[in-house]
Length: 108
Image 1 (cartoon, one colour):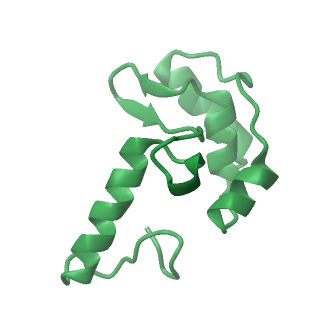
Image 2 (tube, rainbow, N blue to C red; image 1 turned 180 degrees about the vertical axis):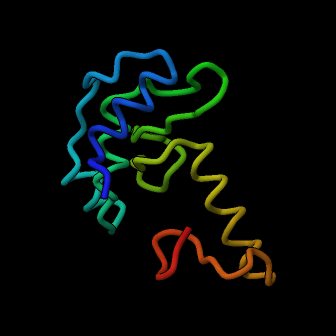
């Protein structure tokens, strides 16, 4: 199995960015508010790659506070919120094949 930190460093090299930790997040608070544990490799990518589009190839979505969420706090940006809602609607209508939407079991 590959070391996630090594994979992030290799990805950063391919994208032409440093791959050094650029941000830190209160993961315990974020996971508590989301009601789920986030994958360790996602946390590493969020901390080590720049937020937003990198070389117009990869978009790194990082946790952020959004006023759009009821109560004024969500740790997914509005784009991610919209994509998750769209995927859930599509699944409810019978689309999406064998994969469910994160954080459901068998998720994608």
